[in-house]
Structures are given as structure tokens and as C-alpha cells.
Length: 142
Image (cartoon, rainbow, N blue to C red; front, side, top):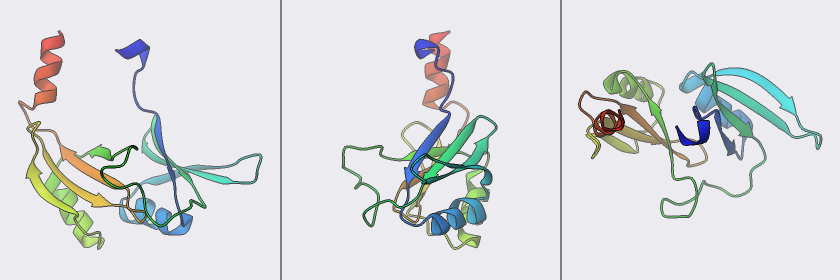
């Protein structure tokens, strides 16, 4: 483990419209709102639950109209693991979330599809398949 780092605790997004973003992550993707904090400058932060130890942290009042371009120097995307990609795709379609990149088998041997959030941030949904490259790499470490 890299310097005793055990997991990703949260990822933070600066968003243009907090209500629109909450509708996407909370109402359409089903993330539970965990808490709200007010910073010393009066700015509100909202934490949404992925797991008991992993969160999406939302900062409102972002400037600009869209997240960084695909080739920009920035965080490129976030990947969320799902147990069944077809069930996730059906849910996304039922919620009216356009599939940006349709389901395919990735180079790592896992199924994936992609969407964009209201600010244009890219989200990959991935179903890990037996024999994937990550699994093989972990086996080599032991």
C-alpha cells in the first residue's frame, strides 16, 4: 500500500448550480446526502455518500460552464464500480441520463459505460469481470 494510504476518502467537485447537481447525484444516481458544512467564508459544502468512508464533496458557485476538456491537465474522470452494468444502464436511461459512451469491454477486461454530470464531469461506471487486468496485477503482487 502506498505510504499506508488505504482508500480514496472523497472527491470534491466545484459545481455551477448546487440544486441541479444535487438532483443529478442524489435524486437520479441515488447518493444519500450525509451532511452540510458552512465554511468560515459562508460557503456551503454538501457531502454525498458513496460508501461509509467514501464521499462526493460538492462546493457550489463554480465559475465557467463546463468541467475540464478530456485532454486538459486535470482530473480526467471518476470511475464508480457497479455489480451489474446492464442494471446501471437501465437505471440511467430510466432517469433520463444520456449515456455518453455506450457499454463496451474496456482494455482492462471490465465492462464500462460513461455519462456526464450537469457540469460536464465525466463518470465511468465499471463492472469488474473475472480475469480482469487489475485482478491479474494484484495476483502478481502476492
